[in-house]
Image (cartoon, rainbow, N blue to C red; front, side, top):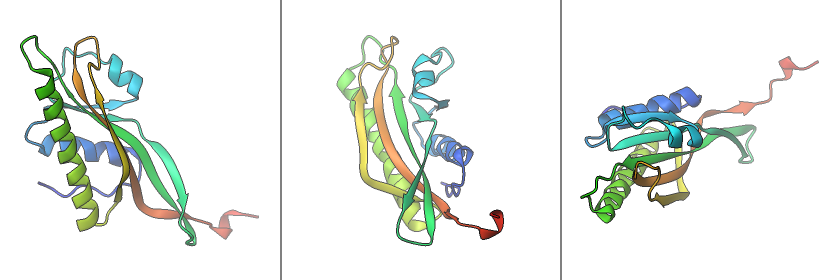
Length: 159
């Protein structure tokens, strides 16, 4: 398992989740895009279980310091496909287990390396059942990550 990269922009977040998919022993495929894109994506090339990352939103927070905190709000989806003979509850449980694996990894990395701060407080997970006309099931987990560094006023940029 390799260390996750520092997060400075949306592409870093995408790279980080691609690395998570590649390093998790059960995740077979990675998709990135808006929620609508992910729902409409062609399933013919997908391998399951699949990790999907929604395009993040930038968020800014004031913590009382001399700079503004920068971060992202986004969501990831762990998606499994349901064959006719599959037990839906078992698939839902498996998707939830993989989602918790990812949450635990983000939490551990943010504590151990401090290259980003993953905020577990307020993370929401919701069961998606079925997610698509293909009868896929999964978990969608919303999260917040604070980027490295902040936004500071630079007087040299003003008249």
